[in-house]
Amino acid sequence: MPSSFNRMASMASDYNELSLSQSTIWRHAKPLFVKAMSTSSLPSSKLLCRVADLGCATGGNSIAPLVYVSSQLPSVCVMEAILVDLPSNPWTVVASTVTPESITASQPHRRASTTFVSMIGRTFYEPCVPPETLTLSYSFVATHWLQSYGGDLPSGLCASDPLHVPEPEVWNAWKSAGESDWNMFVNARYKELDVGGVFIGAVCGIKSDGDHPWSKVGYLVYQAMESRVKRGDGLDSCVLPCWYRTDADIRAGFEQTTKLDNYGDDNGRVWDVEVCEYHETVDPIRERLLRGEITAREYGRLVIDSFRAVSNPTIVNCLSKTMDPDELDTLMEDVYEACIDPIGADPDQYNLDESFWYVLAKKIK
Image 1 (cartoon, rainbow, N blue to C red):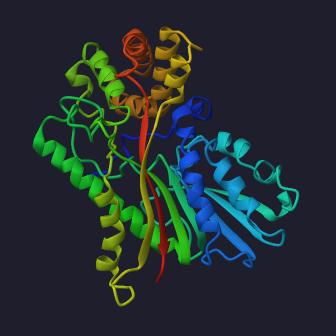
Image 2: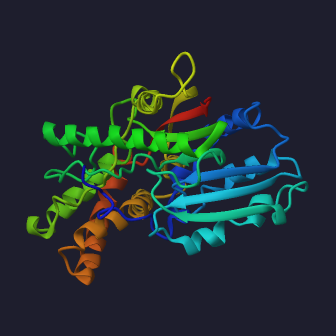
């Protein structure tokens, strides 16, 4: 299957400041870390704890999980935090954000000198460390970004939402891409984790009302682009290669590891999915609007700025293959400006509310 990597780009360098809705993930993910760190699979007697953040972006949302893990380790335990993202990631921002000092500053019993931070520019659809060397790995708001490419979209931007993909054959191709990539992701985690190690994920899902997170904002952006970008300039191949998953999709990925590798206990299992819980989170920008702290236009601008920090690098990367970069920058400024007032006028429809499956899976063999 073709790859999305020649179209997809890393998050913008200002993602730390603008990823407000993503930062709320920790409130639901923390109980999974508490559970993981309290189990016998991660004993306090270990002298080395290696933790990987898969899809770290600029590192702002890496801090809370790493601080918590460090706080639960004895003073004699060496900790290595391994930050993984695409080679094009803004790694200088990561290096200044996630440091031994930022991980240990609040913990008198832990020392920066025994805490190490490594950065790996590599896709998380393949193993990122040597086999069976990780204690724990986690991924927040990242696994919906696909490596595989299901095809051009003649009607929208977001690959998973029928609003953007009314053509059944195109939508089914992207569904297949989503299934294949999740299987690859889970298999890579199996190879990396030590037996007894744990994977924790916040995996994007469809909202309870059937809407796809961020998708209506994305469709508004697409409509503004459609009136400004010629078809010959690559609009059809301008795709946000994402797929949102269900509980069944997630569990199927862990079950297929057994079928693929033919390992496991008498029940054929190599993973124990201990938690797969669904939570929806209201966008903190919308909460500020509801509290009267910002105006409707300020809301619209903050929403489009957040969407832009995540999506604009990929949009620009797609269109830059056929458009002049300076012309493209001016065009996209106009596109985003055109979206601000419609977003502010209808925050119930145009918002960045999040919906995730929170997953804890233990490697048992």
